[in-house]
Image (cartoon, rainbow, N blue to C red; front, side):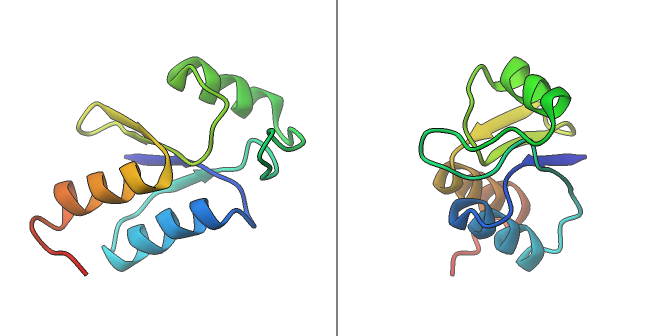
Length: 92
């Protein structure tokens, strides 16, 4: 299972969602807070705490790949990981 901690309206989160959709991946999206450079308003304290506990950071987007035991922070790192893991050598 893929879990994406993200925020609606965040361009970095959108980049990851679009990549996941293009790759045909199913995922669960969590919206712990609003986007913002200094961390937006927390919308769900429990989900925010889970994200910080797993990642050690208050940064979105954050991906958890349970099937492969991998966690990734930041849109570029996540997109690279998804393309390498789920699309092989395919590059757009």
